[in-house]
Length: 125
Image (cartoon, rainbow, N blue to C red; front, side, top):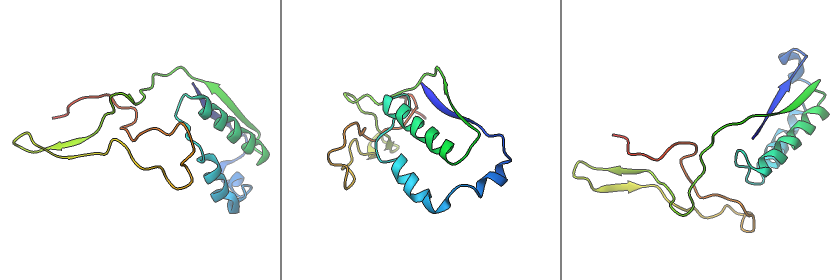
């Protein structure tokens, strides 16, 4: 697994004015255009893209650092959901297992169903 780790040798507040704020919306939509689940190849590609962009902004250093971590992923054969159960044990609400794809994402692959990210299955009481 990889995470973006930056070493910035300039004062944080002084460096903020160097970033082109007019482009924040562009970069935000560009960086979130495709699914990038933690620990996947697509997430590594995105981290490299951000690293390159930060170097273009003039940061002294932007390094990718490898981390070994345990991550949970959704089980597509047995998707989990959250439900509310009343005093008699009746399920009165549950979250959707699937959602329609957002406009413009009809042909994008790798979109996961909604899930309670990085939490174990269980029955809280």
